[in-house]
Image 1: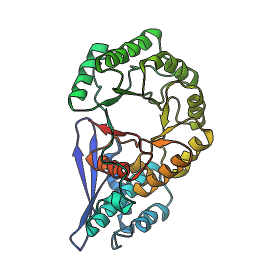
Image 2: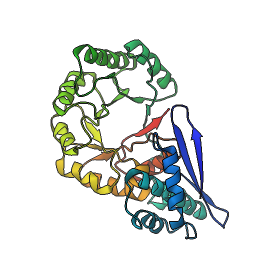
Image 3: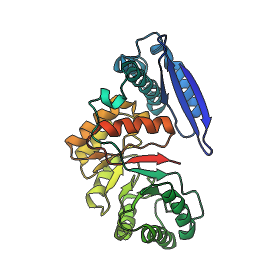
Image 4: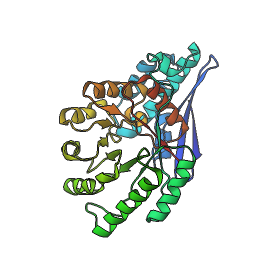
Length: 313
């Protein structure tokens, strides 16, 4: 098992290559913002649970990696996911088919994507609109942004007005069909999140992501029951069972599993099934590189309740 770290400007990517004695190799990704060397070390510390095994036994290898020592959270799951996805890659190559065909075949030929990571600029409507123009020139018909400046917990009236003006400028420029997604980044207390959402709702926003603290997802469910904008969350969950909070709380109609920090393809498929049983759709979080994007697109092909895909600049 080989690892490759790659600079992507303001973040780094980690790619994992699983080699075999048959000539096939598989590629996975274990990117986690700010932890590139940590996750690389984790892959090599855990690789002995996979080396020497038949890579086509994908689920058995993934389970061995995650259950033979104490679970270490996201970093542990990232190592598991990178190797698991690479093994799916090998299995598909050995049979001459894409991964989505191994998982039951495709529901669609394309999926709507939204751009993220594009809005590092001055906190003004003019600067955000200029950046949004660049995003749209790439062909995107949807984008996600956090327009709230440095606000934390609560937001001042001037900052809220600036956020409104930024979103209004984008809406007026690109029209009602252009999708605008808001990432709150867990920054507001619950009551303030609702107040801000109600203020911005007339701008026809696609979703309201991570509206309050990630410490208790029950609060997000409570917000979702009252919020005029559809609520999305789930990117910070590293286990399938954590999504039961959303199922039991209700209200959250868009679940955001992060395939790489959740443990890979098999676990994400399980979350998609749980979402479907509870009338929800999935929109996988993906803040890494092209390997993680490719993984999400295989899931998009074979998952019926797949809504939209994140794509980072």
